Amino acid sequence: MAAASLVQLEQLSRSRESPQQREQEPEQSQTLPPTDHGRAAYLVLAGCAIMQAPVWGYSVAFGIFQEYYTVHNSFGASPSAIASIGTSQIGIMYLMMPLTSGLLIKYPHMRRLCGPFGLAVTLASLVSSAYATSVAALIATQGVLYALGCGLLFSPTSLYLDEWFVERKGLAYGVMWAAKSLVGVVMPFLMTALLDRYGLRSTLLAWAVASAVMTLPLLVLLKPREAGAGPNNRSRRPALSFSFMRHTVFWMLQAGNIVQSFGYLMPSTYLASYAASLGLPHLTGPVLLAVFSLASVPGSLVHGLLGDRLAATTVILISSAGSAAAVFLLWGMARHVAVLALFSVAYGFFAGGFSATWSGILHEMRRRHGDDDGGGGDTAMVFGMLMGGRGVGFVLSGPVSGVLLGAGGGGWGGGDVSSYKSEYGPMIICTGLTAVLGAWGWLWTLGKQCRRLMARWDLSL
Image (tube, rainbow, N blue to C red):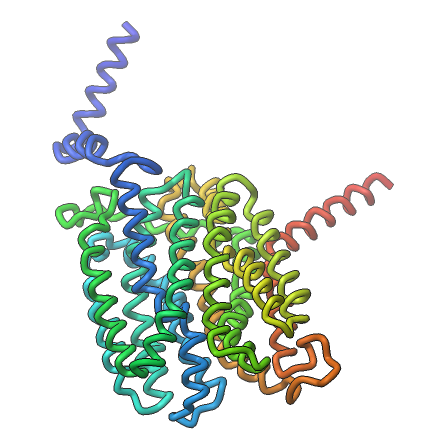
């Protein structure tokens, strides 16, 4: 009799569903491929990794362009204005991620349109910047317009990765950031060779052609996992959740993310110029940038894997402590190429892997809010907010780095054995301090635990 009642209740529940609901549910469960493994998931991961080349190729090699613009100085611009080209490009791209992530989560059918439109904007910016005659024009084209195009290419890519990888987000994001670092190994040499042989205009036009060739096949390969993201399912819109923003822990982690980003770009942007100030050969700059990027490959993978296994604050502490030690102990004492190379390895591994620690934050937010809305909207939006926070730091670092460089000493003293008394001294100190404060989330957690212990101790008295 109880069994009959259960059958009647099930039939009554099914009768209240529309025919479309009864048809859609089994169809989606059968057609959705598995997450975290399988051919489809790994194809998307491979596509996301390759996409890092056209998206980040220019920004990871901007140190080479920085030196080129400074040496030739055909625009008559200050160091801070030249630095603003690269920091504006990468900063704006990061800053737009919260907005684009929110829109593409709310309107998933728009993801397929972002790629082609972003590629068109990217190509237009590169071609127009090739004929720029002032730093202001370079900031507008290479900085702002190029950032918008690359951001539209990157936004749907990161969302696809978030859909296809749930439990192994650390591995997936680690591979993606490692691919970006691998691009940084090749691009300094490539851009140096092109600039030396063909000049600025031909280099930018050649990069525009290469970007189109790499991106067009990926626009076909990269596809969403969710059936609702297809063009025939536009009525199904996932809930856009901001529940993670109610918790203090997110904002503490975000604060550390912003501060770390503020100083992160300074070594890679000025490493080539720093090597030149020591009288080292011209090829030293590209080699050091390549070493930095190469060390970031295992750094991203290791920090990403740790993010799947350890608390977010612990992984961030590892990255921050290693970065700070590299800055204060190596860059601060570097007057020879061997020490500079060691600094590039250490800083590249620890600081270059900082973005991969975000997987731990995504797991933390998913654990806190997954029961409320499934966690999908949360993790994608958390990633977008973290990208935006990183952009805040990047944008601020451009003009400030020029000021720090101008505030330094006039040159190298004959008896000095450190870099702190050089023109790069204030920049080195600032970079080290921001690396320490990158672990603000861990410091906040430690302070919270200390306050609890003191409260218990007072009660025991």
